[in-house]
Image (tube, rainbow, N blue to C red; front, side, top):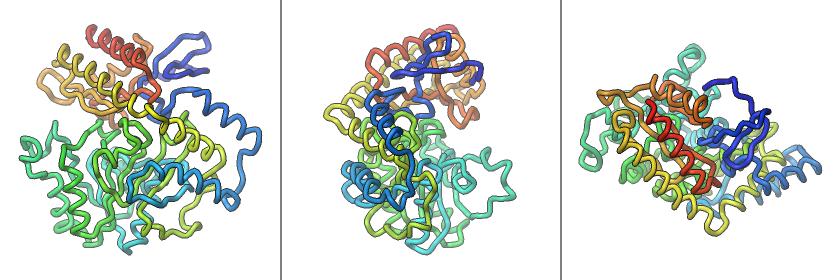
Length: 411
């Protein structure tokens, strides 16, 4: 993406340059601007907090942090009753989740999915399913982790005909890894309900039930990385509940801060409350600005009709994107998503992944149509993401799709 554009102001899903040129952000920043730019209620709360007190040691914020945590747990799956508010980014929240699993069962191997993304710290990189992230750091990565195939039905690695007829071969690979590649020391499986950076990959119906069964059978902790899907992105507060994943641990970040304030949380079943405070804590973790933003974000997203609106408008967004696929099937091979979380798989004339074209589409959107899009796998993938802020109106969605139509028509 071009770095020549400079923004100084934002409102809703729109960004403005110093010359007051208006751009549409169709991807919510880095999917973390859940309530749009400069949401007035968030701004007001943060102004007040900023004037009163920005930071105090977590030794003195325990009660406030617990109140904020409770406001999240009130909407979590019923079996998730406890949590941890000492992170501000998804990478360390995922590391904390693995720490919890390791301490809980005394094991240390992690299984993740190919094309998964769990963060960019050294450890989070090591458990993510994208080799390009580890390429420069192979000499410093020492943990043994297993990567199994993602439930990528559109490009099934087994060339299967789809679930359930395929027998969920991608989940059977977990048994193969344990039998042939592991040290018989599997602590946990970490997965995203929808593989975000991997290409907006939506698992088939029945997949998560199979994963839960395997975890129960083999005594493995199931971690749902909801850094991208959590807090309304799919039209449901938690994708874990919508897809009936029944995880033992859920991680949150990105949208939790509402308008880009770094905030993160780890939620879990009560028996996973095993960490001591000194075992996973950061200077800015659970800071007062993060807590204020999280509390107000939860209040806004949980209001009557808010998530229902995301679901209804998300269905329309999906219909409009599928209409584009009907018109431009030689470019758009697949459309997949839910709520305000969609991806367009860009293909060449033979249906193969066209990474160059996907990146060109993103560049043209910015330069010719004043619209910000993002690609999968940090430009190494062929999926163009469309993920507006949860506050995007129907008019906003129609405008995004209109600009996409103009872009594709010129290709």
